[in-house]
Length: 409
Image 1: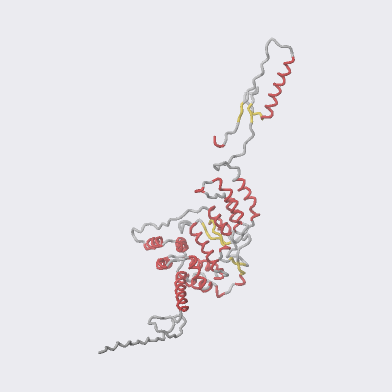
Image 2: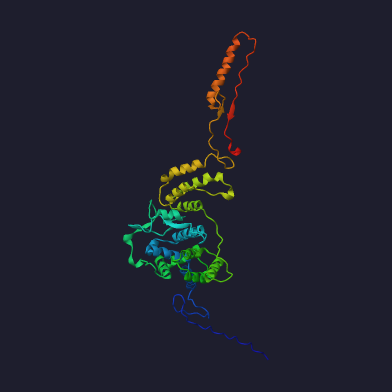
């Protein structure tokens, strides 16, 4: 008896017609989990998710809050006119330099100064890296609203009322307006490139932004430095503000920057906008090298030279400070192998005795003439008859006075 083979049963796939989560189009699929109609829609949805997360970071970042403060100070969003991803990244770099120079809020020695001032009359300075200089506070305050040339600005007549920012406007609202003004795609890309903030810091940063008061100078410094702080430093600051016992004082490890350090960094940064500044950087670096060891290779500008570099960064032409550069070069010339300057030698003089009680100092030439005259008188006497007593050449007492050499001082 023959046994019949079992028949194969075919299960028909269930066809679904879900709506694409990205484009909203209904599509046919046999997958039980598919939510996108095409791979392209899936990739675009993933990109949008990342973009949304980056915009959330920007909304809570100290950098955007800093821009909001500057827009409020200027009274308009239009100080951010013309920004691109690259220019915003450059602005963020200048912002970070100010934070580092101020040791993340521990000092107030440096400020961001404008080449073309915000409070000008016909023009208003843009908040671009090319129009900003990180400089010592006292230089910036003394500079006030002067303008030597260069920089970026827009005409006050071009300001639009819809972009105005009122004093005391909610800071978070101003941040949202800035994102709309610059473009959400641009801001999201800046967050990605500049790495403005990380996900795990959102809660801490948001809390601090809600509890730090911008009108309090110390809090203002903390708000400006939030973006550059480590997560541990943010936690320590939050604990200090809450007054928790055992939290200890708020301390952030920093690197000390001198005014000369910051000026040199700013000269290098601005040389990308003004190529002639590269020559100044070269002079400063080349002349200082023989005076310092490799681990202490720092430029030390005096007060006059710092003022000259400050003016140069604020639009003065290189020719206007040429005399200061010449003096700097002269000050750093004439060096020994170990970096010690050799002062100019004074003329060597001889002390020759005289009838006076005090021994006068006689120049070398005059002393030589007197000695030569006595020698010639002795030579002429050799033609005379030999005397009973042999003449003796008079003894001339000479005392040499020489300045001590630098290493003998």
